[in-house]
Length: 98
Image (cartoon, helix red, strand yellow):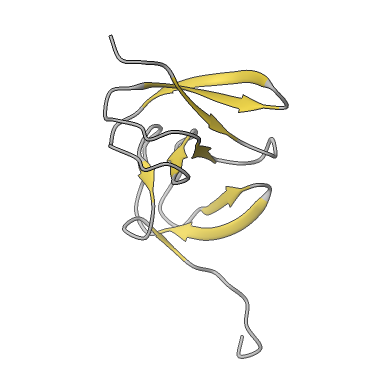
């Protein structure tokens, strides 16, 4: 059985968590909020330390929340446990040109 790994969220609306250790595909990952375990997910991908893992299903076009802030929009459906990175989200940064 794989070693238990941890990831954190800082806001209840977050749909991604930040990995606190490198995560391997099929690792069990506990999601921590306010020093309490709020859920557990199975990693579907290898995820580097400090990268994001989906903790809720994210539909194509949905906003991606990390630390309570919108960090991007899904460019395709993202399953719980998937690595969330530039391959499946796009930035929604607001600039003076918008």
